[in-house]
Image (cartoon, rainbow, N blue to C red):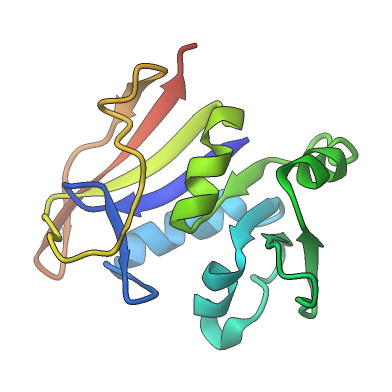
Length: 164
């Protein structure tokens, strides 16, 4: 399993239920990585997508404890164990964890790679954060792109790998 996420300098990922940054190259990268594969998210992340609809050309799985939740073109898992069982039948497809904060934290131990777009800006008033992989003893920076700019934001694409 993989994580794919866009973070600020202080590893912030969201504020008031929305993304912090809208960078066209990052959205393109996200689409390239996840199209034709499986995306796993929490219910609030699904709700934050355009129209609250499943992402096209992907198998969308939502982790939620809400027993009444259902949505068109979405597979619902009520627990991580249920998700693991479901994914056993999905060999050959890559799995990407796409948020939010609690899903990233819960799924991190099961992931082997993290595709992190690092934006060179602090967001001190953010209310959702990714685990700081630079400080995590089980993860290391594997690769880093050159710095790009978009609408006054400097960013780079990085890959972290689990080492333990």
